[in-house]
Length: 419
Image 1: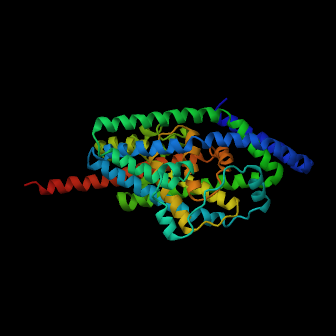
Image 2: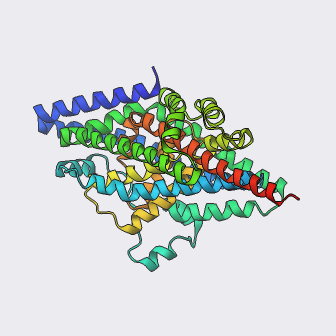
Image 3: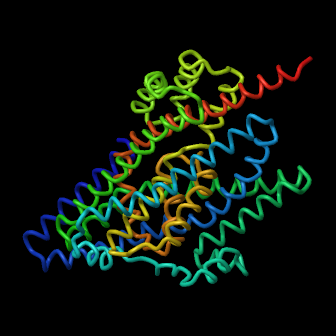
């Protein structure tokens, strides 16, 4: 049985038992919720303990990797710039759209009470109250203290400084440090796989505890989360068409029709890597892009660029804020959106469910929100994943269209300069 299927079975059975207890005997439901709560908390703690070293290592590894990629030529540098620009646009769009969409949905107060009482974990990291405090807190005075307090934003800023510093030292020493942090990342991924092996039990305990206290509120809330993610993924996918038209010089109808085969492969496989051959075929045969450009840009996009990653991180945090009845400030949303872009650039290669907690937790925590509900959201994340992959593939081809157009302009300028 696939791990995803096991987790969904744990979710369904926990919800069924919790709802039955809430309907038949509320007093017994409260006792059972209190009994299973430590199981879910242990599982969440197991996931949380890997996040700081894993994210720290990934950011440090990502900076020299991106630097080496950029040094390989103008096309690579241009592609990286397009990737970061599109990621930033998607992230800040989500920071605006997700709270707006959630404000249209009514929330059951029983849900907040159940979440606070049944799956409370570590204390929420407080966010800076004023702009001056927020600004000065970005750079940590003590990186070890920031790590100990799980203050993700200053910790990642320190990791960025560390990573850029590595690009300035001798290559043998740089390679030594990068290999060390790669080993740290690999070891943490192994630990996460061990913890995820117990995910059906952890999710079962979490869902049972919440549903026993809130009834159908939790089930309907998870439905809201799924619909929110699907809607945002589809919105970002559709927005790639005018981007390709304006910046890539494509006709929207022609571009939309040409990329359908790659989108079909993405939907069926839910893997950008598996869609790469179809994307190359579309880019070269249907859209007529230069093989020299597509052979470089598309593999880079698969390795470094998933446009719906920051969409997922920010929307998950916005959903948690909605579930707890927390009004997010502009500073919190901006912090989450910016951090989501940085993390998405360094965590593209993470396998499967490993990436969910390692990437969503830092953004949620940096926004000063409870992280406990992420264990529940992880269980249903596979449902909207098909829409995310289609959007990622569409964005890959959109980025290629932009780079290809600029490469064509460079070639024309070079020809005009020749005597």
